[in-house]
Length: 97
Figure: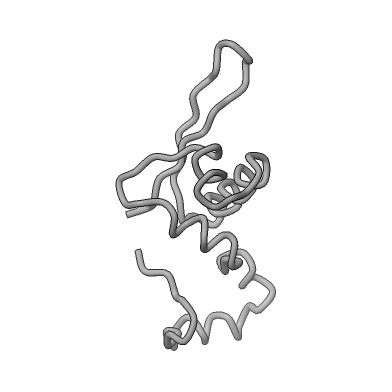
């Protein structure tokens, strides 16, 4: 998956779609921090919020929120495992191929 970075040409079809529905661009566009999180995940690697927090120097809760947002924008897949000790769910995220 290719992610647009600074100074790259934006696809004309994408620009046209953005002009038609500008209010929905935020549903797919990544912030700088979200992009940093996405780029810190290697293809084929599954990561947790704690791992991303350490790599990107973020709090675990903020890393979890960012991962969830990137997942909601369909840049990541995620699997959830129930943690028997706490009853919570620990998600693992990986890059969409």
